[in-house]
Image 1 (cartoon, rainbow, N blue to C red):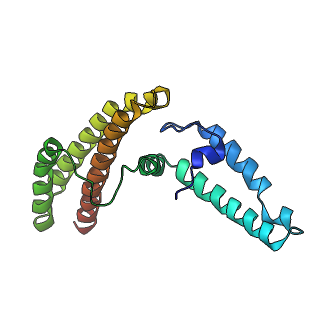
Image 2: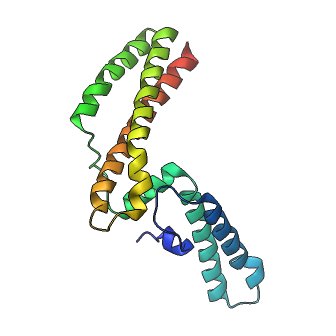
Image 3: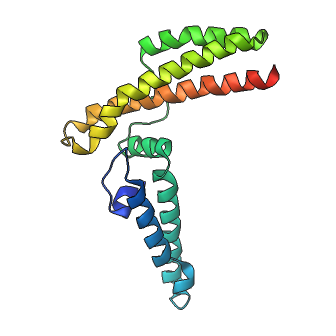
Length: 178
C-alpha cells in the first residue's frame, strides 16, 4: 500500500501545496529522523528510523514536484491504473494533425514547420492549464462526494499534458538532428 504523504506531513491533500509548509515539515522530520541522533537505539529502532527518513525523502521528492504530486494524488485514488489511460476522442482528433506534422518532420526536417508545431503545442498547453486551474485551486474545498468528478477532470488533464510532453520530446529530437 502506498503511504499517504499528506498524512505523514500533516498537510491537506491538495494539488496546489503550500511549498513553505512542506519544506518546514521536511526539514523538521529530517532532523527528527536523522540516523546520527539514534546511534544508541536498538537495531530494530535504528531500522525504523532509517525507514522513516527514507519515507520523508520520498514524500518530499514527490510532493515538491507538481507533476509528481498530481500523479501521486491520482494514484492514491486509483485513477492511474495501467492500461486505462484513454484520452477523449476530441483531443485525439485535435492532436492527430500535430502527429502527422511530426511524421513529416521526421522525414523532412523543416525548422519553420517544427516551430509551428511547437507553437500549437504551447497554445494547447496554455488552454489546458487555464481550464484546469480553477479545478486544482478549488479541490481542497470540495465536499468528499464531489471530489471524484474533479479528479476525473484532473486525470484527463494529466493524460493530455503527458501526451503533449511526448510531442515536445519528439520535436526536441528532430531539432537536434537538423
